[in-house]
Each structure stands twice: as structure tokens, then as C-alpha cells.
Length: 254
Image (cartoon, rainbow, N blue to C red; front, side, top):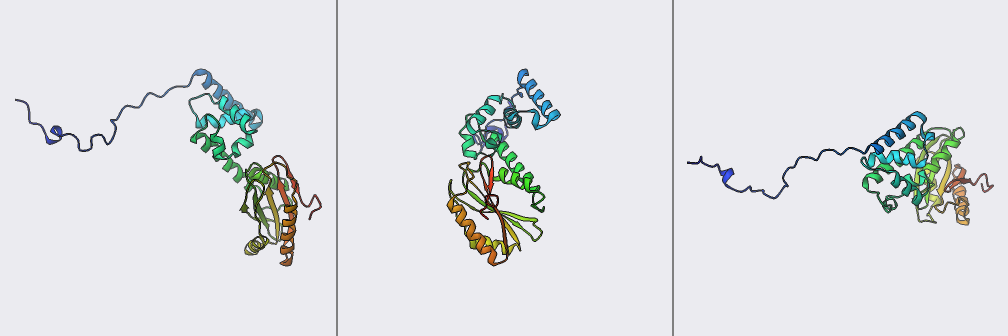
């Protein structure tokens, strides 16, 4: 006589089909030796010589190692550079444009955007709370890092105190590929809220050519006039292009 069966043994599971059966995880695949050795050599070279020891495509490979751990990433690094330009353009490219490149998924986008955010914060930390006169080169580098590869126009204001120390950096407006709306009244209002004594205006030209337009010049004159009424100095207006920037003051426009 067979032993009695318990209820749980004689009835089908109430939740049958809700969850797939648990299967053992497949054994981790190991990298082919030629990829493993290449990655080690590249990492060792970077550790020994820093960024100067590796060209753009290899620096990009180092980033992609983390996003794609079990694949040769050199072809993808070269595709990204061929499609987008240099290393900075790849890291700064919008997520949608990155995904247009074959082989780019969420993991790659995330890795590149983390690097971009870190670069922006590092560059910003080198100028915030410092006198702009003594950190002018760092200020230009920050503006290039933050704005040179943006696909649409962005207008930023750098607010300075009476000692010309940078106390705030704010994006005031974003526009289209060739226009950004700016309101002088709002610029001056914000300067008063921050108790700023001086301003530096910054905006980018997505076309890559930093030559000021007639609209740029007129807008700058309006802001300068509004600021002067309240005793606020407009030190400069920087136009950021793809690889260089132009200063209104250097051009004799201020």
C-alpha cells in the first residue's frame, strides 16, 4: 500500500506558470586570449603613461571595456570616431545620436554619459569660487567642455562678486540650432538676486563657427545697458565654437 499523499503533492500548484523554473546559471565565458592580452596591455600602458600614451580610439576602448566586457570593442571605438569625430564629440554626443551607431546600447550610452558628467564637474570645480583673472584659461576650458559640442544653442551667465570671484554659473536658456531667446531683464534680475557685481555671458554656436551674429551683438548691448543702470559690470561675452572661442572684449565689441 502506497503511503498517503499530502494535499500539496496531490494538487497542481496554484501559481503554476507564474515563474519560470529556476535553471542553473551558465558558466561564465572567458575572454579569448588575444582580447584579454590586448586589454591588459592597453590598461598597463595607460597606467604607466596616462592619457598621452594612448590615442583617442584606445582611450575610447578603455571606456568601452566596462560597458562591453566580453567582446572586442576596437571596431566599435573606430565606428564611433568615424561617425562623430573626435573623443570629445563622442563623449558629448546626445544619447539618441550615439544609439544610431551600430553596437551602441544602453550600457555604452551610460558609460559615456558618466564620463561626460565627470568631465563637466571637474572643469567647473577649477573655476568656481576663484578669481576669473587668475583662472581665465581654466574658465575657457570649462566653457569648451560644457558647451562646444552641444547640438542646440545654450546661453549661460557667470556671476562674479566685487573681487571678480565666480560665485555662480547658470544656464539661463536653451534654444534651437541657431537661436536662443535671452531677456535682459531676467539676466539683471538674477544678478541682483545673487548680489553679483559683474557678469560674463557665454553662449555656443552649434555650427562650430564662433563669429558673433548681429543678433548676438544687439542682445549683448541691451544686457550691458540694463546692467549699467544698476551698477553691474558686463566684463565679456564669450561665443563658444567647436574648437575655439571668441571674446566680445577682444573683438572691440564691449
